[in-house]
Amino acid sequence: MTEALREVIGSLVAVMRDETALLQAGRSAEVRELAAAKLKLTARLEKLVAEAGREDANWRERMLEADSGLAALVRELQVAAAENGRMLQRRIELSRELLDAIAAEAKRLGGNRSETYAATGGVRRTELPAPISINASL
Image (cartoon, rainbow, N blue to C red):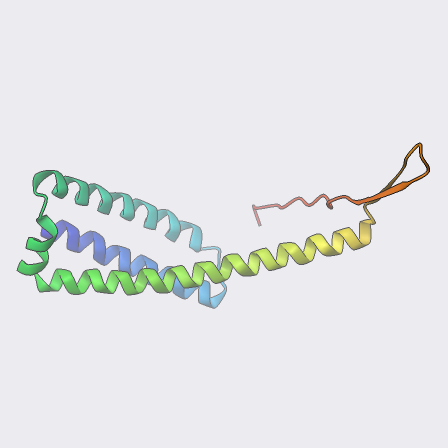
């Protein structure tokens, strides 16, 4: 069990570091494969943890006490996951800013304002959202 955990955690750390490096470099073509690999490794890790939990409720404490290398590997995973999370969060924020800028420009160019005249002579003005379509295959 310990060896399987070491293998999965080590692989997950490597994948997260590779993904973080690619995101920092601005190359997103290879990120899709790494994200898929990360999902598979995470699922495998969850399965191993669930199996260990069913066998012994105190397996974590016993395993970490018996194997200090595993504890170091878990700390390394925490650091890699935090770095990866920060980079992904920044990427999401940049994408959101870009989409907001595109929507604002489309609204400015499209002039999607609507005016409705009421029977009492009042005018109601509304701003309609600009239709935006995203091609995710790029």
